Image (cartoon, rainbow, N blue to C red):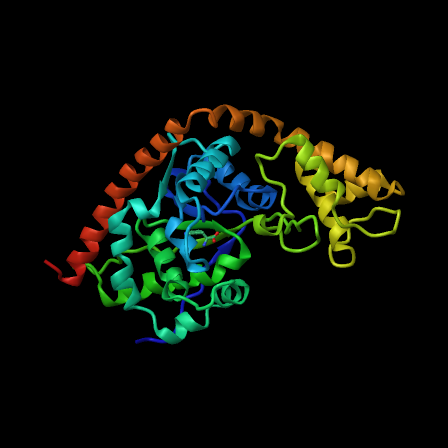
Length: 349
Ligand code: TRP
């Protein structure tokens, strides 16, 4: 086994210029609960932008990844449909983006087997994101999927030969696994003409700085500190009213020195599409109450059309399931072709 791993190239602004249609994007989320503003400004908005530019997009609902840090995937069908609901409300167009659950694509999952042979146990053991998830898991014992799911995620990316993966910083170790798997597979199993089967995927990092939860910690649905896309305006106001701030009346944008206040300023800035420094200057000596009023209004105004669309789409669960069925059909065709190619270069019959 070769020991060198391959780091992904990282970009924040891909240069599609000439031919956006020559690129394929894959990204995805675990169906564990509603998407929140951290997801929206961290990646969803970016996906909609890419879609508008004409890039081909695959979005995986990573249902098998739910059972890495918990025993049972609670209300899986409901969470899966609601994830699709959030996607569509945010602006993903199922006619242009292939939205599918990875458990519905057998050939994708079968890629896991040869891919597992390309990584060492030592490499699986030192993945920092996996280590962090183990540290935060409430399970009594760590299961085998926890160590191997980054290789499964490589299959998510490589089955459709995606060359661009919009992700947050925490996913970079997983992208390194995908790049390493791609390179080792290509080295070990070249095509007859010597050309590689898999492209090397590149990470597309969001330029938006990290939004904190209303308690100043990492924004997460399980911590009750996140404003979900589907929350009502009253719920939104209540969460922001209870947000942690400090006692200084003067509002400033200083993420390192005043993380909680700055995250609120940033949220208003993202919603208004303005610079956070400008918002802070405008608020001046207004104090936390004025800041929270501005943030609440900005968020509710920004999300109003998204929430209206979401409420309308939510009345037709059959449509959400149909989107997943159509997506699975397209994803299966692509995965079947890739698996056939993989089996051929490996010399399987
Ligand atoms: N691991 C990602 C998360 O927890 C979800 C995911 C699954 C993903 N497969 C992916 C992200 C492929 C990017 C590409 O959010």
